[in-house]
Length: 233
Image (cartoon, rainbow, N blue to C red; front, side):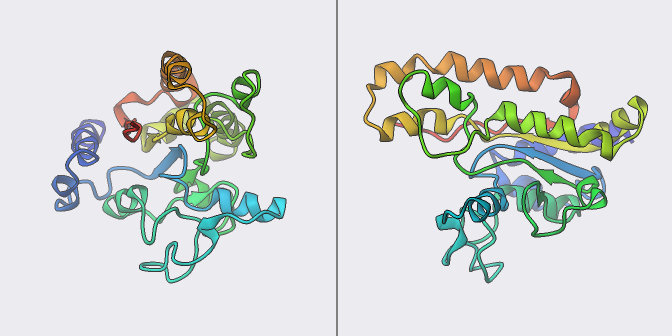
């Protein structure tokens, strides 16, 4: 099964650049048992909506026309329909990935064994403390990539019991690490900061993402996709 999934995993990775290649094929069906997702609004399936409701603050993704063309109601997705992660789940024959914070799709361990999404709209690769230390604080919660990985590590023992169980679970899971990093540049740009200053953030953002890829607890490189950040400029 490992060799079989490796071929499918490579095929799936190609989809993000050429979507029709994978979505027109059924060979990805049954290859993975779950999806583990980290990222920002491009992958958020409801986390920011739930957090905003808990904080008593509104988010635009909680109102129509967001999600209306497919789900018929706001789901917290920053789209009028489905996201890339939703199409990937469909092609793999898996349920839509449940947001870690949300109540849409359930929050039982059994639900999360089929997929769990830590992506939060507005999330950054670098911790909020980085921005605050440079006088660029914002109103977003600290749901950085490091925080998301920490939440996954806390959840993992409930998804698998032993090291061998966890290795098997991760080996049968597709990890989507990103898109993330765009907000590290967007937030200061919207604040009017000098682009030359922001340019210096690039190696730090890359280092943070590389560190996450190399993390031993999510090290399943055969089954990992790292979508690139959206073009800015």
